Image (cartoon, rainbow, N blue to C red; front, side, top):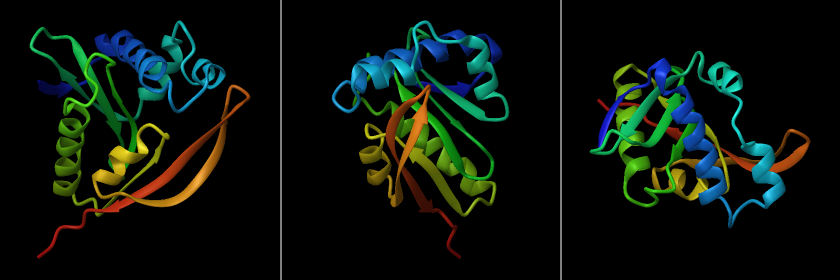
Length: 158
């Protein structure tokens, strides 16, 4: 698995991976109506282009140059998107992406990370040391979802 920066030509692959991840890996956490509102098929590429604009995105590729996952973040410590292909669940892709970003943000002087994790992602972020700030109910395309505001201090010691 190798990491590289996102490029504009990745847009369609990223949007399709997100959609496949939601419809494949979130089944036990969100019902069909919620998944359809969260990740409509087909994905709206102009919406995705706008969503990724202003975020830094790192891509994880397998040995065949296939997209295995991605993580999008802001330089203020916000982790906005972390998704793994249904072909690579629980194989270290999210951890690899996360460790890379945490190290880069720490090096940039960021002292805390924050995210709004889905029910699927909450356990992953907890394993990385994030603490629950609050449970939230949000709406996407008129459908309610539960998510979790989480935060982690990464302040360098010494």
